[in-house]
Image (cartoon, rainbow, N blue to C red; front, top):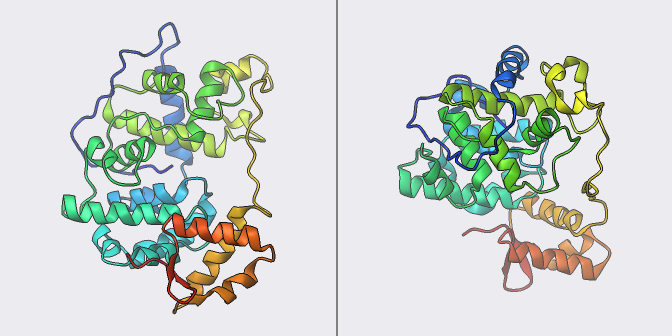
Length: 316
């Protein structure tokens, strides 16, 4: 979800394309127009600036998962002021990461980012590793984040498949309105097939196709008349047929355990001392759901129970 301004040279990480599908139009017809559009229209975001460095890119990737840019920006900026390097975060208790995460949602990401910072400090001298395999070995980092950091921070050649890129490929190449609900092996093969051979071009393509999906080829109200590849888009050429696959998953929040967890965490984030059960009981009227949400927070390591019915953010 981020992009570099000036990639730092790093050892090549060439993906295996032996199982790439054949018979499709080459991706080169798309690369140039999309990258040229990106060069002109890319948003000026702090993690895209050279001074962000690999750590800034990694922090942004954790925060941007399932969270829009406008919500991430203020938290990201405060985070980097407080913890400009992985070692700065690693020496803090994990609960401080949860506290600083604020209302970004999915707070387990804060614990995972803290765990990655500890591992970077212990294994790599405090520098975000350059190798894709080393990134993938860090706790809390999956294939997407490892590929994104390697590509956006180090200018390497990796397929970076987030929701925006998947939607662009689905429409432009396969002619469908939406990609499957979950990433498939066929999508991964397609992404590898459309990856430019040159490392710098590949990293720019990853960033540019992601930005195109975020700004133009959006899930709703897409602006095809502004798209640099509308004349080549298979979905556009087919008359923009409506989605006929499985229903797309919608997200609900009101009344869910996730909402209750958020309210409980909000109390604990504001507290400077352990919070008694009686205070937490006030945040939600339904006792069974409230207890279930609190138990889940404890199980996830986001809340630490203490003797005497007290709770706090985790110290270890």
